[in-house]
Image (cartoon, rainbow, N blue to C red; front, side, top):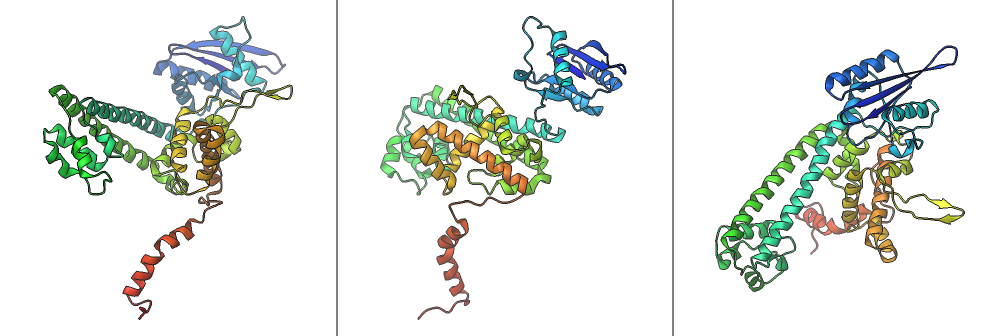
Length: 397
C-alpha cells in the first residue's frame, strides 16, 4: 500500500511493504510537484507494484499526480479528507501519508468517483462555460443598472431587456438616436402600449453613461460568442455519447447543453455509483443523515459536486414551469417547505431520474402527463385541415 500526502510544492509518499514472514517494512519518500518529479513518483510506485495507491482530494493538486500514475497503469484511489482525519498529536506530512497507507491496508477507505481521462478533459470546458454564464449574467445586470441610472426604464415595459427587440432599442439609444426613432425597433409582440414604451425610453444619458454602455454591450456580445464556441467544442467531444444526450433531453427542464454538462460530470457508467442514493450523496443534493438516541437532528445537505448541484438547480427551476410531475411536486413542496427547499428536492428527483434513464437506456415517461395525447390535442385541428386540403379526408358540405 502507498499513501500520498499531496501539496502544492511537495508530495510525501509512504509505502507499507509486507514481507513473506508477515512483517512490514515502511519506506518513505518525498517528491516535488514538477513534471520530472511526478514521473519519478510514478516510476517509484511502479517499481514497488502496490495493491493500492491512496491520496486525499486536496483541492486540484491531486489531479496531476493522479494523471502521472494513470499513465503507468496505476489507478490511484482518491478519498474524501473527512474520512481520513488523522489521530490528534501526529499531524505531519509523513504521518499523513503513513496514516493513509495504514487505513488503505485495513480496507477502511472507499475511493471517490474519478471519470475517464476524456471526460476529465471535457470537464474543463463545461466548468469554464459555467463561469462564463455567471460573468454574462453579471454584465447584463450591470447594463440594466447603468440604463436605470440614466433614467431609462426599459425593464418596466419589457420582460427581458436582453431580448431581440429590447437589445435593438438599447443599441439605438447607445448610438444616440432619439426616443421616437428608437420606437421603430419595438416588436409588435410587446404587450406594453407604444406610449408606455416611448415614455420608458425617455432618459438623460450622459457621455459617461454612453461610454460604459458601449463597453458593456461589446463585452456581453463577446461573452455570448465565446459561449457558442464552448458549446460547439463540448458537443463535438460528446459526439459518441449522442444517444445518451438525446435520452436526457427528454426530461422536462433539461436541454442539450444541460445534458452535456451533466454527462461530463457524472459519466455514462452508473454502475460505478451502485445506486441512485449514492449518486445523490456524491453530488450533495440529498438530505443529510444525522440521528442519535432516536432523535432526528439536522438534515442539511452535505458538500458535494457544486457544479452538478448548480446545474441541477437551474434545471429544477425550468422543470417547475413545465406540464409534468415535476411541476406538481414543486407546487406541493413550495407551500409547505418554501421555494428553496422545493428546488433542492426537485433537483434530487431530476438526478435520480437521470440515473435510472442512463442505467436502463430508456426515454423519460411522465407518470401523470401523457405528452403524446397533449401533442395530438394541440395539433389535431391543424392536421385535419391539412388532410382536407390535400384530399385525404373529404371536405364537408
